[in-house]
Structure formats: C-alpha cells, structure tokens
Length: 186
Image (cartoon, rainbow, N blue to C red; front, side, top):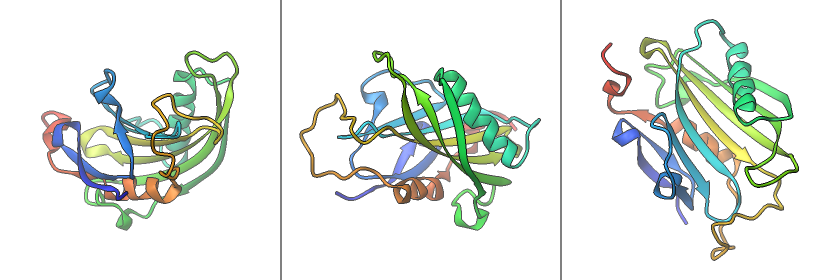
C-alpha cells in the first residue's frame, strides 16, 4: 500500500503526504475545525495536524516543550516526560518559505483512554512549525500507544505495518500551504 500524496487538509488550504492506511477521523466523528486527525487502519496509532494560536511568549526549544506539556494537560496525562528536542532544518520543509523555526520533540505521556481506567505510556513525536506572519503555531503529533493495543476499527488488514518515524517525517516535510486565506485577513 502506497502513501497518499497531496492529501487535502483544512478544505484544501494545505496538503501533505499521508502514510499507507490512514483513515480520516472526520469521516467517523466530528473533529474541531483547527484539527485534522488520522488513525492507522490496524493499530491505535494516530496523526494530528493542528493550527494553533502562536505562543509568542515562548521561543525555540521552550516552544516545543510548551506545546508538548499543553497536550499532556488536555489529555489529562498523569506523567509527562520529554526525551529529546531537536531543531528541524527549514530547508527540508515544503513550508520553508513561511516557517520561521521548526522543532521536533519526542517524549512519553501516561494517558488513560476514554473508556480505560489504567493509564498507559504513549510515545509522542511532535513537530512544531512556527508561522509568525500568520500568528500560527502548526503542531503535528504522532501518537504511538504500546504495540499490544489493537484498534477497535477492525483487524481486517493485518498485513499493514505500523507507521514509522519515517512516515511522520514525510508528513511533516511534505506539508504544503496552498491558501493563506485560511489564516484570515493579514
């Protein structure tokens, strides 16, 4: 199964390459207007692309940590641990023309899913692309729950391998802006 290239995001304002077997969650349930969420067809892995208000009070590595901790708070994580934060070379991004700084963070959060009482360590990889001219922080998140979890969507295609960091990197580097009007009047 091949990746889906130039998949339209946010009504076509952006596009990106999605990994094989990505299911658009908005086909299954409502998703906030500032998010695009995709899940793996077999595993509990997910990819989230979010348009967030620029957090101008934090810069550099601190901005990546800020968003990671914010996600942990929203998910009511009982523990949040940053393992690594590194800059992303702007030249590697399709958004290099409008991205002022970019960071990738890897870490773990202890989170209980909606119907579960026991919190499990979820590995998160986040890419933060800062677009100050649009007052926007673009946050891409790759959730990797423990591998023993199987999706409730069905296991009809067990031959589909789990997504990798390479799949996430391809999503991040291929993200392309087509319509800056998504950010409102500038």
